[in-house]
Amino acid sequence: HTDEPKCCSVLVLKWADRTDSIAFNCSCHYPPRASRMRSPRSFLAAVSGHLAGRQAPAAPGHHSLPVRTLQTLAQREPVRLKKLSAPDTGILELTLERPEVKNAISWELMTRLRGAIHKIEADATAKVVLVASSGPGVFCAGADLKERRHMSSSHVKEYANSLRSTFSYFEALSIPTIAVIEGAALGGGLELALSCDLRICGENATLGLPETGLAIIPGAGGTQRLPRIVGRARAKELIFTGRRFDATEAVNMGVVNYCVPGGEAYQKALELAREINQKGPLAIRMAKKAINEGMEVDLSSALAVEEECYEQVLHTRDRLEGLAAFAEKRRPLYTGK
Image: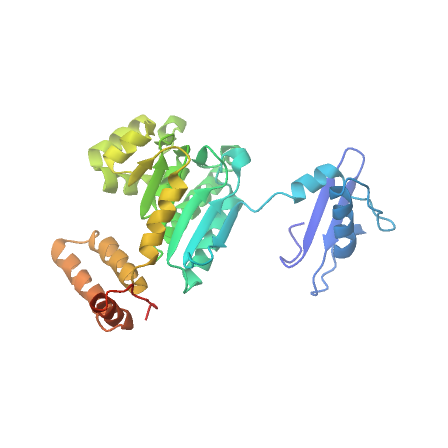
């Protein structure tokens, strides 16, 4: 129901012979419209009963949950954020979790992605982010076109604007981001990868911006980020034709940093992340800022940006630690201070 507060949840099940409403209320005491109430305890009992292959006893006056409902409820979140443990502390994995639809970017996935980016931004211990897919053979096939078929023009515009701002939000993270591409990275999937700092692909990767074949254009940064990487003429060719290109061509054009045997892209990305993770955290952040901001202005202004960023690392404990470690022939222990 759309009129309940967000802190309450109502699951509506429509069957041929009846409609069940299962409501879970928090402490706000909002009166739900659902005709049948199930407490979280009885709901979990029903779920555990079905998962065990038997029918759990239903609460008096309630219908127990059918197996097909449990399959829907058991669906995982479309985006997962995970912190790696020692010795890889500081490395985060952001994983797309819709393999059944090739990680098509739905409204929900986009919302969850934005939420994950916000968590990364707020995490002072985060140093590198790996962006990968949980499903083999595909990174991301782009927008969820089945969902889009039911959108009005205004909703499509809102979706495109939201996706564009989400990728820009991700690109603006102060720490390095690495896309792990196995299989297809098309449309919005490639645009997500282009918003990362580095891209690693398996030799089975297929990349492209096919939007003109659908009578639209890349609308989540593709028309701007691709020409900044491959040049204006090459970007126009790829976007005008919607042509897909393989991993070898992607490396040659500079779209990806490394191409490795299929199935090994994650390992290569992790190796790069580990190398970055050993460097001074503040230095990495300032280097990214200097490069990104400097590329958007003329050379004289860019050198001023570099000077400003260098000033930020000049009076740090990490700089002194780096000099001491060099003199003592040991590995530096950086703290980000």
